[in-house]
Length: 132
Image: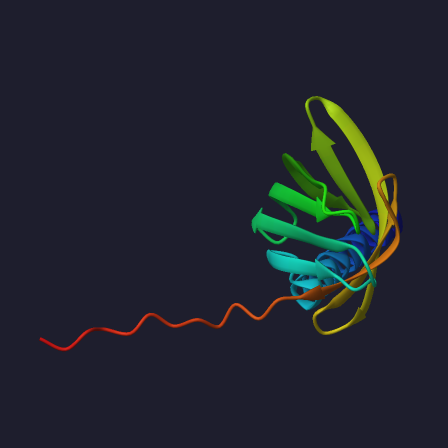
């Protein structure tokens, strides 16, 4: 009898802990709000990351123009696992540390994105109706 009550108490605690962890993760994902267009905050290099999809996964487009004017782009899939941003292109996955600094400001550190700080572009364009 006592073991059944103890087991039930442990189950309740585990369920509450899991629910709390999920809520905290969802709040963190909403705070980062990765979906949208992000511009690199570095002198001399123009880079843009455009993420689409859900709060934790989707597709991305990366465009880079170096100081000499050479442009390159890359498309693939992204997802967030823990605090790691995984970018997958042509079956090759690269892991990056993802850091939240402030609203609309994140840091990405990993292959091809070493210690980069991105600022979210304001996407507040509202289409206006033309009057007849």
